[in-house]
Image (cartoon, rainbow, N blue to C red):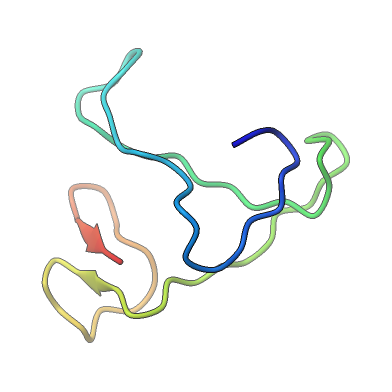
Length: 70
């Protein structure tokens, strides 16, 4: 991946790991409408066919200490 790259549905974006100053492995995700952060606005996104904590009826994104399987 490189900055400003367009991605398609189903494309691998990242692998989860533990580096830097963190207590556990995690992935940061941010969608923007421009490649420059000072100009960009955040874009909404949704996971399809995902479960949070093994439940299909949990809406939205996982909160802290929760897990998503997408």
